[in-house]
Length: 146
Image 1 (cartoon, rainbow, N blue to C red):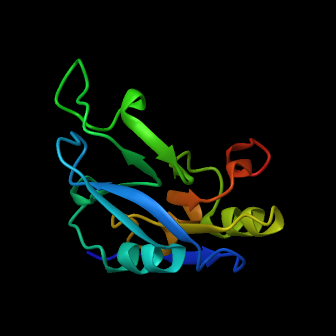
Image 2: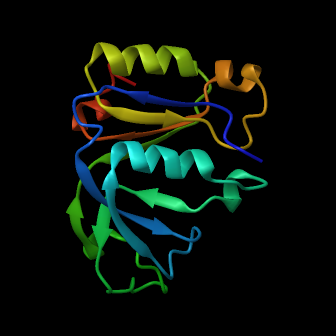
């Protein structure tokens, strides 16, 4: 199943190189690190296929070291972060629509990739507000933006 909707917002930093990490699953026992432009990351996201949200790999706009968590075998934990290049938002409150989120990110001049998950199979789900944002600007974390 493919992603339902993907938008690239902003154009001033779409060609900037960003280092990021992809984890194969929630357990994050393994990782792959890449350096690509935001546009290349968006194309990678757009090509992603999975039967459900749980089948997707995790993307973090941070790089991670090799230290595993004390509680398990995970590489994805705060003490293992080497550098942060952007933020991720997993929005599933169902209050704000996808279109409204795009408008708010544009109004705040935030360069971002915003997209829906494979479980968003209709425009009704997009309207209900379930989406992800990968942004290069920390202002996206402000309550008045998203």
